[in-house]
Image (tube, rainbow over all chains, first blue to last red; front, side, top):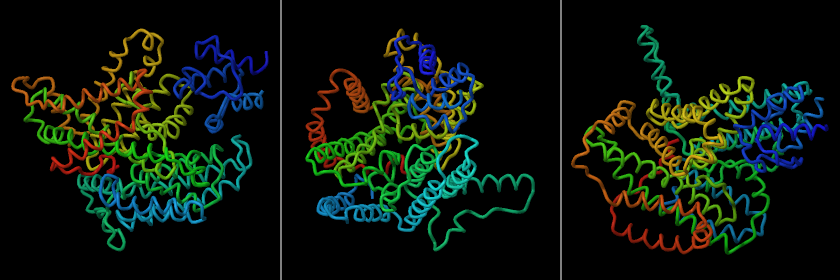
Length: 76
Length: 482
């Protein structure tokens, strides 16, 4: 599985929606239930899935799914 | 100069045509800044120094930070330096606000402690160190332009925006007369591009701007001022009032502060629109919220987004390995900050108000997000429950002291229901406002939006009639004190 596919799997579990199809330009506005409160669950699940750790400042700079994915790929 | 006063109308009548005359010249931006400084300086010219300080400080730190190439990796070469300049900027921005807002309170409490432990030393009142006889008063708008400048620094630090090179544009961003006094709190990413070139002349900006302004004026002068008379009477003597009056006054205060502050925000957005600028929406039918979280997505939105982005999110991410408690703790701390910021005169009432919302959010955020709550609980029950909670918290916001607030809460349950003095018009206003907001969230929204011009014209006529027959003063805005 590519990182994108693994990330998509995490999104589907976290937001409890099997229809989610990730695109790099997607933001929180495009995913139902993705808000500041669910964001930590998402980040924790991503860190677990990929076995990586983000630092706080990185997390605050992500603007969309593409930014998140680039950061994941740089840590793999 | 407040929007609902005659000097402002004169100011607008001079500045608006000149702005459009100068639109095609290079003078439009300096003229806009000069107008904003006149507007702000009319309140107290000395406090313009503070505006200049915040402007130059953040512009300068922006230059320094932009020289350190952005890289969020902890091992990056300039990582520590960027953090250093960010914190320096944050402290340099915040100390005037902290000084004007809390120094007296801090000194009084510290002196009380010195008294208890028999230390003869006493801190002087902060007013004695003010130079040139400048009064020790909270400079109007200081919170709003400070928060706005902070968002510029933090967004720059996070790589969300580019540094603003043009000092004139930056100065306009810090002090733009429509929103300098009470918001909406704008972000650099939304506002700075609007100062790049003047918007094209459009008739729609005039009609939209004028109708927003008139609706805001009506909310403030007719609705908030009228409700205020009743609310003040009850809250000034809560011990003399029965339960029905206390309940009605509490509900009426919820609507008074909504009409006062959202009316102001409408006027700010309307004035900005007349000049072709767009300010963000600050209120979105907050009393239709279906949860406390939803309420904060609809109430004072520019502020709640600010505390969410710059306080809640960093804390929550920092404590993320402690999942449910981390989020709860971040919520409580964030809303404690909100309470501390609202402090004006009395201290503990606003702290209790902030903590009520913080704990309320911490307790309900999982529930509010659950599928069962979203799908199965009837909307009207969610709305009623949320409104009841929000109103309960308003008791502490409005009461003069904690003792008063507790007395009101107690009397709501035990005071007699006989012989209530209930004003019918108050109830009518509240019910009509609710119906209007409910319609606004149905398929009627489009119709209401399309007819907003007619609405505001009708309201303007009504307003003139009311002003001709009333003698009550309209007073200042509630949020001017923060």
